[in-house]
Every structure is written in structure tokens, then in C-alpha cells.
Amino acid sequence: MKIVYGLMTNTGNGNEFLYDLGVWETEESANDYLVNKLPHSTGIWVEQIEINDPSPEDLMPLTEKMLECSQCGVSYSPEDIHIIDGVDVCLDCEPAFKQNKIG
Ligand SMILES: [Zn+2]
Picture 1 (tube, rainbow, N blue to C red):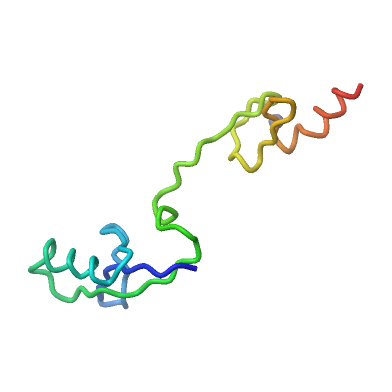
Picture 2: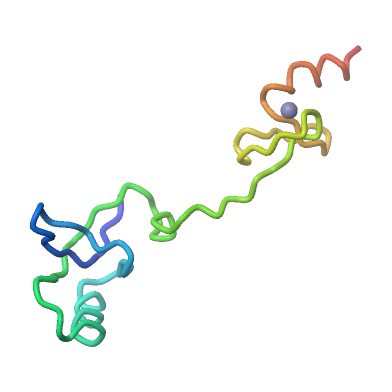
């Protein structure tokens, strides 16, 4: 778990984290942003946010590289692709691939 600081506002329906503006490692830098970039805004404050992921990069949209299975040609995220003898094979194709190798 990691603590970061973000900007919150009350939309009228409750408090909302202003995700688009970003997050900061320290309360001070979040405050600096609020004072310098949003000097005329009211009803925005800095709040501590706990995130479960170890790095603030994980709050950014995932730009994970997809890997293509050499057997079926479908793209998968890297954790679903095993590299067997230098060949990318997805979990679905892995049993058949191994069988073919043996046979
Ligand atoms: Zn496959």
C-alpha cells in the first residue's frame, strides 16, 4: 500500500477525487499545485489517498504491451503468454504445443 495526495472536490453528490489532475508524493507538492495552478478555485482540497499498488504509475492508464501467441495469433497480456523455447505460446495453446513437441 502507498500513500499519495490528490485533489478532492465536492460535486454536490459527495466528494470526488480529481483524478485527471494527477497525484503527488507529498502533501506539500499537492498544495503547491492547488495554490499555483488553481488559485481561483474554491471547494478543492488536498486529501491523502491510499492506493494498493506500489507505484503511482499504476494510476495511469495501462499501456501494457500485448504479446501475440505464435500458435493462434491472438494477443494476450504478458502474464497469459509463456515463452517456451523462445516461442510465445498462450495458456490455451500451451498443452497442445507441448504435446506436439513431444510427439
Ligand atoms: Zn494461442
